[in-house]
Length: 396
Ligand SMILES: [Zn+2]
Image (cartoon, rainbow, N blue to C red; front, top):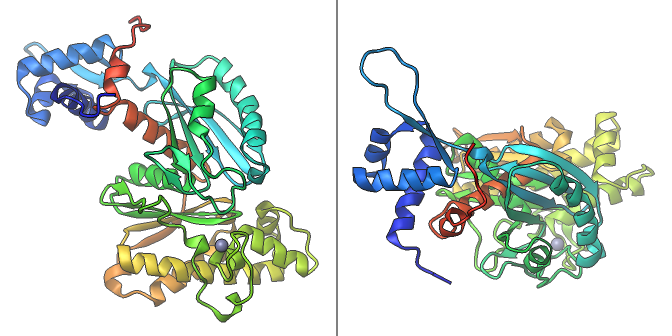
């Protein structure tokens, strides 16, 4: 492995990054934007065009003089398969190099059935997407609801993923899609990447509120991972209120926020009050039907989640907190408690320009963020040598 990408790949990466971000651009724009010499830019534009990643077009302008060619990134040059594994469901999508979803499907699973059973169901769902017409597949990107050691590409000690600890999920996919790079990311980190990129923000917290609870922390333009990949795991921090004592969490600890305010805990409490609730979807249905117990419990859950989020807001100072996951469909019933606590526990310097909102991407934030991660890897100085050495492309 070549650990240090040489300067050439960094320069090509810069040219491509500029075209992805600001294109279409003229040759002069690229020279200005990268600070590279004309001959270097010429060389790199030619290499990228040959690989099909950019295309040159001459606008038909009649302003006198010869119009300059413009170079545009070609997002449909290739695709990535994204697999967003949740506790009870999986979103699969084939996305282009801009993260746009070309085809998708969703399935139900129980993640605690373990990797072999779950991955074979996922593979059955992926095959129709892979067999349908799509641009050449360049990578696979998998999201999982547990801490990920990115360097080791493994799930580490996930509190809810029984049997997945240390499982080689990357190896599993690489054995079935040989030759394709495969990356693995925590599910809520992927959501944070998508939400931040779409808003053009550098400081944002994404909450996934479903069966479990988690936060993705995107600060100074990058995911905050922590020493073991577990940063943002608000679900298994201790709830602030007295009711938390004696409530056992599915992670084995006592009094976790999730054990009082997670989707599974709300189902438990609604069943204890005679309601039929076996999924987070049922919880949302009861709220939308105006069930008084459901409304009361979800409002209380919002305040408990708000307590945990308030600390993060005070410490990290995001500009947006964005909610997704099934419980986010409770809308203002859940949101109001979070907003109330975040504002009550922080001063105006933290909250004055803070927006707390429900995601417009919803559960597609996961696959979108996974696509961005994979493409950023492919088109980075470390990924570009493999991408540009592909010879199967024929320009049309
Ligand atoms: Zn816990």
